[in-house]
Image 1 (cartoon, rainbow, N blue to C red):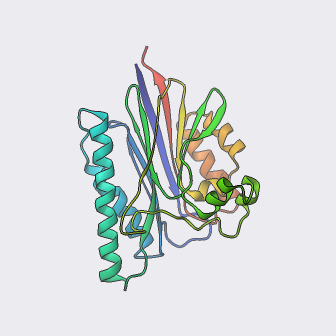
Image 2 (cartoon, helix red, strand yellow):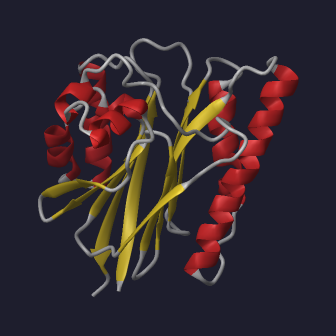
Length: 240
């Protein structure tokens, strides 16, 4: 048997006026979410809040597949709401939000995501990225056009190819894995990983969840804090 504990943190960063990120931590349900809105005031913050809102009230069904379906259905519904809002209130300009979520049960973990907010796992000292960015630059990396190192400095690194509200149909990717006692998971917006390299992320994820969350935010701010920074750290433990 496993159990878990978590810590969540968000910061507007050093350059932005408003925080367009939103996050959710419901450890009692085994559900955590980070959403990074796009479009500026009255758009980006509206979008990320819209993603989180239905998930604040969601009930956990008995079966994990039903829970995953319920989260996906909520995101599909928000996609349509944001499309309608953009058309009716903002003259049709795009209002969208990335989303990355983690659902945990005793034997199975599920990551659902759209956009470039990420889920990382630290296991046995090894850092693994579970999500895959939906971005123009990631597609270039996978086609072999550029290296990962070049991607990190690429001028189009902020161009995402999927978002809630970004298109008529929302395609949500899913990754399924087996959680283990001793795992640490990190959900984060790009405001974190664009400022803090993965080796530093790995080291800080080894701390307890509250200290890890604080130090990751502090380092992102110290390194420039050019965007909003949001993260959730989840520690998985044995109940024996």
